[in-house]
Length: 141
Image 1 (cartoon, one colour):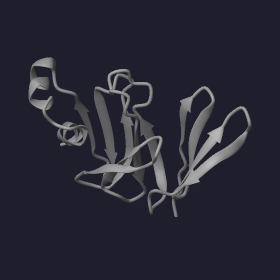
Image 2 (cartoon, rainbow, N blue to C red):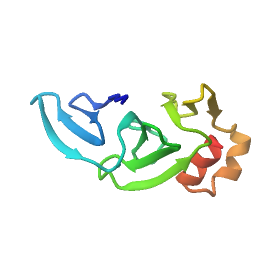
Image 3 (cartoon, rainbow, N blue to C red):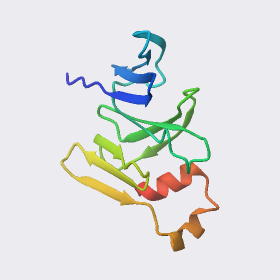
Image 4 (cartoon, rainbow, N blue to C red):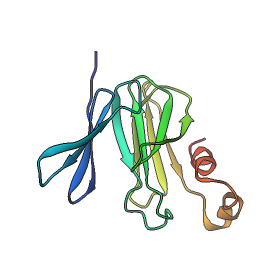
């Protein structure tokens, strides 16, 4: 069994770590776990967030991938409410978002990969009427 773990820094005082299907919310100063949650059934192997993005309208999303799945699961960071899932063509082995949030990179278990770029401003007009889920799905298609 291949078990991977990930750590995602939220701010200067906290971070999230994964342990199988658990998310552990840590307080760096107190050196202890503030909260635990298991919003996903399978082992979580990668976390990404749009935390700190000033263009996101204040909504902070947590992107998770699990071992052996074809889905990127998107949660609201503060409440861990499931927002949506994005289904891809193969099992995902790696995923990341650029710091500017304009590129998604997805690596698949078969060795293939995909890099998607947010459309240019002229193409943004078409996307303006779509909600965040639809924009993410279009970007990753």
